Length: 411
Image 1 (cartoon, one colour):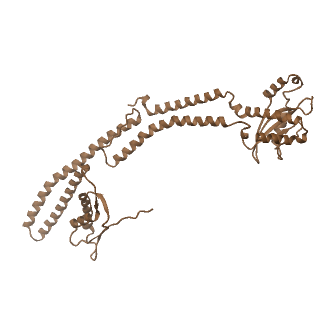
Image 2: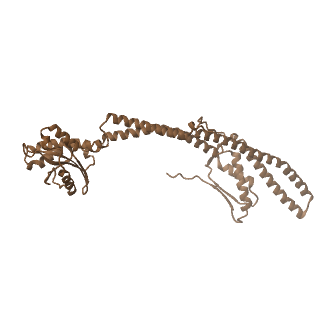
C-alpha cells in the first residue's frame, strides 16, 4: 500500500500549492514596493498624471501665444512625448498637432465631458491649491479606440486661461497614438512584463525539478522494459521510492522474475521431452531396420518409407533438443564474424536430396555476425523444407535458388 503522504498525487498537489504560495509572495513583494501599481493606476492614473503635466505645459505655452500658433505648439510637445496632441474647446473647435481630423465619436464624447460643470469655479480661484486638488480628483478621463486607421485616444479636461484675469475655459487635452500603450505615455508596460517574466521563471524553476523527478525513472523503466521485451530477464529496476513509480518498478521486477522462471521452466521441459523422445525413437528406428531386412517386395518399400519418417522425426527431436540447450545457455553462444557462403554450402550439402536442383548465388565477400553451427543448422532447416516441397518443381533447371548480395546504402 502507498501512504497518502508518499503518493505521487500528493507530491504534485503539494508542489502546485507551493508554486502558488511563492507566486503570491512574489506578487506581494512587487506590490509592496510598487504601491501605486494597481489596475487603475497602471491603465489610467499613470496616463492621467502624464496628461495633466503635459496639459499644464501646453496650456502655459498657449496662453503666451495666439491661436494661430497652437497647432505648432501641439506638434512641438508631440515630438517630445512621441504621441500626437489635440485640443478641443467648449465651443467645439479643435486643434491638432497633425493635418489629420479628429473623429466624430471623439468630438461627441469630449463635448459631453465639457458640458459637465468643471471642478474649478470662481469660489476656487481664491484658493489655487483647492482648485488643483478638485481638478485631479474629479476630472473625468476619455479613453477611446477608433478605426481606419486604428488610433487610441486618451484625454483629460483642464483649465486654459485664454485671457488674463478671466475665468479659465474648460478644454479637453487629448493624446493620440497608434499603440495601446502610447509608446509608454499612457502607461508603462515594463514593470508588468518584468513581473510576468519573474512569474514564469519561478514556475519553471519549481516545476522542472518536479517533472524531471517523474520522467527520469520512467525513462529508465522504459529502457528496462524494452530489454525485457527482447528476452533479457536478468535486468532489474532499482527505484527506492515510496510513491506509484517505486511501486511500478517493484511490480516490473516481480513480473520479470516470474517470466524468467516460466521461460526457463518451459525450455527445460522442451529439453526434457526431446531427451526422453530420443530413446523410443532410436528403438523404433532399430526395430524398423530389423524388419526391413526380413521383408521383401512391396512391404520392404513401405518399411523404408516408415524409416524415412522416423529419421525425419529423429532430426526434429534433435533440433528441438539443440534449440532448448541453446536457449538455456544463451550466454555461452559466441557470435563471430564469418563468411556466409561456406555456411550455405555446408547446409546445401547436408540437406540436398538426389535430383533436387539448388542454385547458389551468394557474394563471397558477405560476412555476418553469427554462430557457425547454429547458422548452418538454421539454413539446413529452411533448405530441407524447400527440397521436400519444391525440389522436383523443375525438370530442366534449378527449382531452388539461394541468393544473397550486399545492399547499397542510400545517401
